[in-house]
Image (cartoon, rainbow, N blue to C red; front, side, top):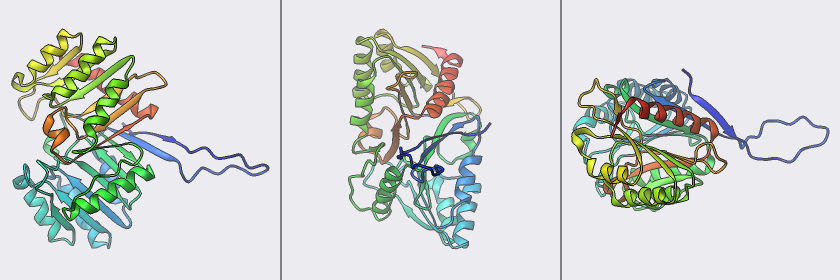
Length: 327
């Protein structure tokens, strides 16, 4: 399969008697769907860097990635990496050491955050991948995840500004560009607004769901007649209290209860609102529906409207709903 790529091009006035050239301000979005498509698009993105690579990663164990970062640094590319230490220092230490030994500027994430759960790669200050997945090969084959690669100038600039602050543990209220969803600053309000704005449907996938605010927002949506469909990871019935309440309010729910690395796992964090209507919007990112994720972690997501990306997420999560166990 190939990643889904589409664009939103800025309008430009017609020039009489002159052929129109493609606008240099065209914003593109490329959806990468896991496990269907593999990591080729991400690997190729990293290898394409000419000037700089900035990466913030919760967990990094992929030696293809660390080798590519080291190769880029050896070729004169400025490579900077932030790795979580509060949860994943043990897992991340081999990557940290390898990168540090190979001309990569690597930084343990700010311990002021509960964890740094963000998963983002920015190339040449011009293109960013905002991901739900960690760079951990043990999870690739059987884990539902997404990434969106974009060159949206405002969003990329905001990601870089925040990276510069996080790389030196400086305090910052991250700029939101046109579309960004940051924890611990605007994620709760942004996701609440997305859910509150839905008039027809909400199709959601979540790994974690124990946040009362998100539960209440979905119950309110159901009361006003919005169809809510949820695909939820629910190992050990961890989220059954919330799911029971939502089912009672009318939500359609399918669960996955994978217990080992060989079982299909719902790791994607996505919200697709009003799909198939002119007001449709899509959230993809690292934020779970949990209080820690929304209020205490460093996280990053994106809310945007792009038809091909929305179609890809709709197809994947609808398939997962059909393949799950009805709750």
